[in-house]
Image 1 (cartoon, rainbow, N blue to C red):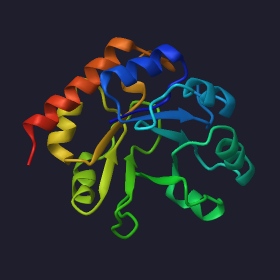
Image 2 (tube, rainbow, N blue to C red):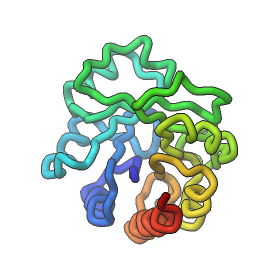
Image 3 (cartoon, rainbow, N blue to C red):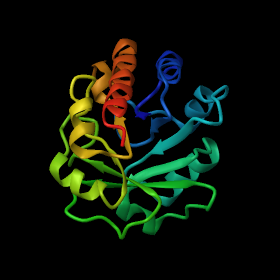
Length: 196
């Protein structure tokens, strides 16, 4: 369970207290954008069991290096094709993003993120295509998820994980503490209902 686009101590604390496994910090153009220094400050007291994800899109090599050195995330999330042009050291996990793709890279043990065509806009990804891909991949489903539809998304797609940003906001770029808790509770209920 990943809460993305965090930018305040209050929202980060809400995600952690509600049981998020991963937290995402956006370094791409967005109302949720933070600096590497700000992300590091927010995570100063964060438990090491929670995965800290740097969320980027088509970063220049210098932009990635600034985030790698200034924030030191656990994982880098960016479009799958971006990794070819970046020097991503072994210590960083990779979360390649595929946007309503027809095919993914060959099956691997590493997770992949399946997203709608445009990030952070509340647009649903293609759940039927995601369900097909989730059978062969550790697929993290993103795109248009909310506390109201994440249970249905999990039942339909059976993803390895889910990722939300705009679906837990009161207005664009502003996280809603109640919606964060409701989303994570809905995920837990769906997991219990569909446990294999």
